Image (tube, rainbow, N blue to C red; front, side, top):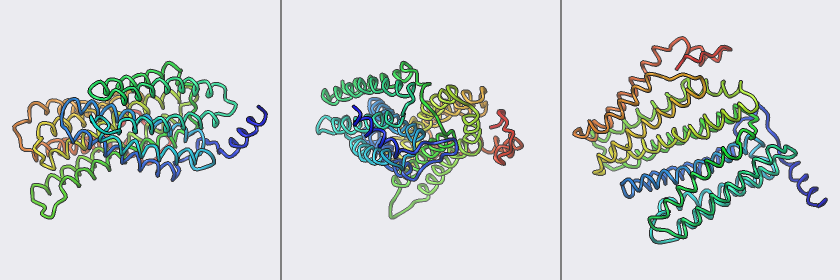
Length: 402
């Protein structure tokens, strides 16, 4: 027992704790490259066989991957990701997540072992995270207790994943959906407010970077869909519309929203900081990333002219709605108000799904591009003074901006 304790103390001594000045490490950025690949394959999974069941499968896999990524963001906030045992754990998790990513396109196929490979690799991701987190918790009894609670939840979740992979066929998605639900309900049952958030800046930066990654993936997907030796005028205009949408998605988040949210998180302390991080980032940011993934799918189908115009419109417009709903919830949770302009644009995009079916694919891409660009222009003009104050990093940050 003494020898085991001595070994743990030795391992823990090589872990470097974090404080409020901690920032994102290069190893975490390296880890995110595998996450990019996973997002790309989620889009590919849904693109391969357009339909409601495929969309559900894509959402399930996205949720699985997302919460695996989030777990290492919390761990990297407890201790530096590029030091000691955590560095080794990050590399192991990155390798396992890579196998998760390559399995995604075939995870629900009737043949092959992709589902079992995904479940096994994901088990490595989650159990490695919890094991290292338990060591990093040190003498913090509350943190150790919540980690042990999450170990129990993760065990049930993984059993459901393996069961679904073993059963296969149509029931698989329901087993995996149950796994996702158990995983997320478990966060509340084990009182997730006992998690520690040492650096608000690191945490906000990690999630901001993943939004950039998702937007970048959408640009890559659209570019690949139209890559050809002969670029037509139609393709050129469609690409410009797609790029405009991507820029607007970036602007709506990073121009002001990310700055305000980080400031709110930084000023929060203790239990309230953990609760705010859980709600605003772990959960609400899934809407951001999920929305961007569907925007990418919609633009691939419309810009690439694959003959799935209706599916492309549903994906593109639905993805934008999801992204804007994320913004509404993000602001509501952080500053207690709603951005009316973004709510109106969300409703317009939602009504555009059934009403714009007769338009060409190019026009269906152009409509959200023009609408989002107009929204950005209106916000810049309407909130000029508070926007300049926030972006100038003045001490007083107005919660009524953006």
